[in-house]
Image: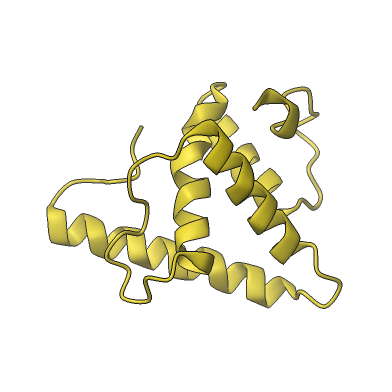
Amino acid sequence: MQSIFPSRLDRTHVVEACLVGAVMHAAWQQSPRPERAYPAIDALWHTLLGGDPAGAEPVGPLSSPPVRLARVRDLTTWNDRRYRTREEVVDLLDRTMARIAEADRRTGRPIASP
């Protein structure tokens, strides 16, 4: 997994990033452990492609490394489309955060914590 999650970046001067890179950067600010970003990667994938519009499982159980790799590829492919707009990416992030907040509210506990 390490080969798809860069670890040697100048994280102090990020100007723009792909969706997955931005999530990894945000998680790095909380912990140097890359696995801190895994629930967010899974939640984004579930929002985009999970087939659960009601958001019953915004994160679901943590995925295995091969599944997460496929999800990173899916998210990267979606994000890297030439016609993809910043607004679409921000909308995906907003919808994912809303799903997580709703699930947290329903269960009374944070589901995205490692």
